[in-house]
Image (cartoon, rainbow, N blue to C red; front, side, top):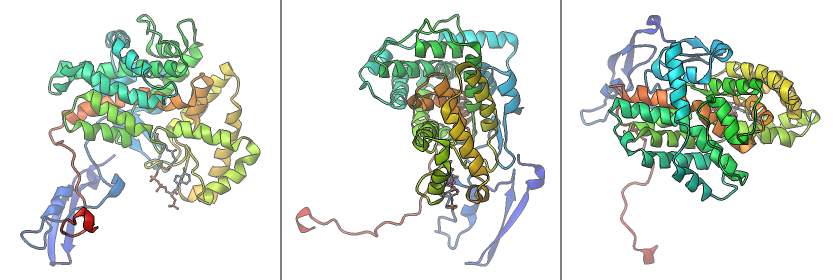
Length: 429
Ligand code: ACO
């Protein structure tokens, strides 16, 4: 967290001109646009920062999630993730992220009723999903579903209207699992299952997946709630930044979230949980772990579910998930892949290669094992991540749209292409 002790000024001398500049430091940052004052001549555009992959760029001021990657700390609106995972529900956390405070009993009851009541989707969405190939990856289907939601709710284009915004944000949280469940059922060649307004959010998810006759063990419902809570926000990660960047064009929130879904689909982001299970299956047995770790060290493979751009310590979410694994396996019996995962973690954490690079298990290392124990196939794991992340995306979108400093996102570039040259007729090339 930035402190006043980090404030002050920065004095910079441009050795090209000998001119000295002084810039204010606020919250441990300088304004990148201040550097534009550093010029070699009047017609110079001014100095810019070059930061591919945004390794050292703060894109916003946010009051939603606090993350200290060196010490493995994660808090939503000030509340430690460990307390929320132990005591809260997913919809309570969703309310907290959007509104900034924990809900009262009455607020939570009406919010829960509202969200569950919004879970059904327009029949045209089920019809569109039916038109996908049966083996369509469900993340591609969810991505398309958000494009369709934006056409079904054109009033969401009014991003300045409070009621329209809230409608779109609540619809996003409510409908994302329904679209995911329809995609899952389509893969199985089954019809969709309508959500039941008298049941809770996570119970509905499991019933929409496995059928209205399925009676989930409450311990499994709780494990799912915990997973969703742990994924609910993670400040300016790739998909959330995508939602903010796309939303900065003032497109409707459904479209911005659709872009976030696409970003999450990637194997270096939300797709990693699926990749972990593929990796564990490939390793096949505990005895093959040392050989696999050697492959990783020889750069022939990545240890999926390890490493993080911000955490250079144990991801606190991984600790909670590991514990939740034990609770779930008490109900379902132990997944044999767990033994390989535990051995892989032990080997990596004792190996100089991983220690030196501060590579620890991230949230995805164990989450797939729980999803698999719940009976959810691996290509649905990233959809589950998206369901969990939906409140974070919409809370961050709302913060962005209310932030007077935010304008349309538009980075600069250093042009390294050809100088001006004349067009060559095709027959002369
Ligand atoms: N396996 C092996 N080596 C790794 C791994 C890994 N999982 N992660 C990082 N490294 C190595 C890199 O090769 C690099 O080594 P070098 O300095 O000798 O070249 C060093 O550690 C630093 O890694 P970077 O790639 O620079 O770290 P970056 O912050 O760019 O990447 C990322 C973070 C993408 C998460 C990376 O660690 C990774 O690919 N992990 C595997 C995929 C994964 O689990 N993603 C989920 C992330 S969490 C989430 O999205 C919810």
